Length: 444
Image (cartoon, rainbow, N blue to C red):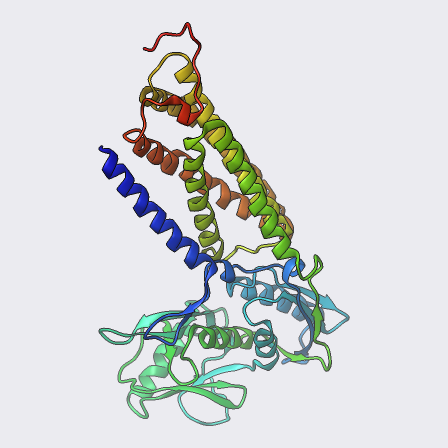
C-alpha cells in the first residue's frame, strides 16, 4: 500500500462519515417524491421521562352481557398491551381503573393522538359477501382472525403499495376455522358479485373486488381506498385487531391528560451536550498521549456514533429514556478504554524494540482478547437488565448492547484498518505517535 492510496482511502472514509452525520441529524424532502426524510436521530422513539406523553381512560363495554366482566377486562388489557407492543409502542402501559375502565399511558411518539382516537373508535369486524346488516354464520368475525399487520406488497412490475395483511385462524374449537370460512366466502362471491365487504360495526369500511376464484391461502391483503401510506395501514391494522376483541372500548369523556416530560423539556439537549463533551474529553486524552493515533480514534468515534444512532432508530424495540442516555455514556467509556488498551499495547511493543509496523501488528493481537472480554461482560449485564422488564432497564440494556456491538466493530475492524492505512504515511517517526523507547533498547 502506498502513501497516496492511504490518503485516498482516508478521504473516502471522511466523506462517508460526513454523509452519515448529515443523514443522522438533518431532515429534508426526498427529491421527486412526496416522502420526507426525518434523519436517524429524529426518528429515535423517546420515553415518557424525556418526551412526555398522554394518558387516556376507556370504558369497557361487554358485547355479551352474560360474560364475566372481570375476565373480559383483564383479557382486554393483555390483548391491547400485546397489540401495542407489536405496533411499535413498546413503552405503552395499559392498566385497569375501577371495575370497567382501562387506562392507557403512552409517550409522545408515533402520533399518540391518532392511536388514542383509533382505539376508541374501533368497532367489531365483519367480512361479508353482501352489503347487508344481518350477520350470517358464513360471515367472518373477529374470532376468525389470528393476526393483522401493515406491510408492503408488489402490486405491479414496478410498484409496491402499503396495505394490511389479515391472517385467518387455521383451527377452531367451535366450528369452521377462519381460513375455511374465508375460502368458502370467496368461493361464493367468485360465482356472484366478485366482491367482499369489510365492516366496522354497521359501517362499510372497505370492499375488495375482482375475486374470481376461492382463496385458499388463509390470508387477505387490503390496499387502496383509505389505506395509502404506512401510517394509514398501521391505523387500519390496529382498528381491525382491536375490533376482534369481545369487548368494545369507548373513550371516557374528558379523560385525555397530557403528561409533561418528568426530566424537563431541555433534558435531551443537556444530555446530548454532556455526551458530546464526554466524547471530546476522551479524544483529547488519546490525542495528547498517542498523537496521530488519537486522531484515528476520533474518526472511529464518529463512525461509532453514526452506527449507534442508525441502529437505535432501526430496531423497533428501542426506546430512549434516562436509562438509554446512561447506557450511551457507558458505551462511550468502554470505547475509550478499548482504544486506550490497544494503543498502550502497541506503545509497549515499540518500547520493547519493535519497529512501528510490527508493534501495531503484535499490539493489536494482544488487545483483542481484553477488548472482547470487556464488551462481552457489558453485553451480558445488559441482557440481565433487559430481562428485568422495567422500561428504564430495558432501554438501558438494549442501548448498551447496541453501543458495545458497534464499539467492537469500530475498535477491532475500523481502527485496525485506519492504523494499517497510516503506516505508509508514517512508519518511522515514533514522536508522531507519542511512542518512547529506552536509550539502551535496540531496535529489533
